[in-house]
Length: 79
Image (cartoon, rainbow, N blue to C red; front, side, top):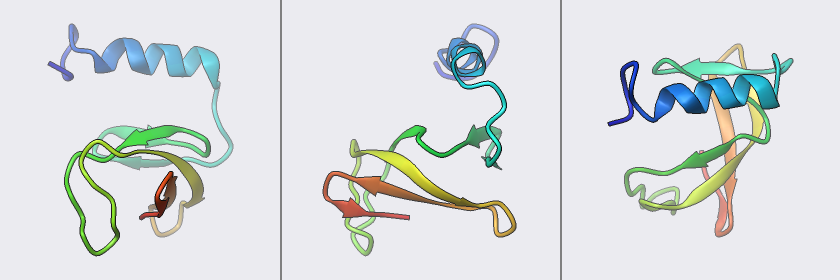
């Protein structure tokens, strides 16, 4: 449903390109590009980090060299 030419990801990529053209910091993971202030959705429970399926977070910082990002959820910090 999300992948392919007719999937929901394609319009999302186009809308993001219009709304936020070329952020200075970004990291690519699994064919997705993330930049500071992007919204993210947790899709699996991670009890150690206390983030759960359905939690919405915001990308806070990006470490492009390590290809890592730090997200903040309403419950607190995740990774």
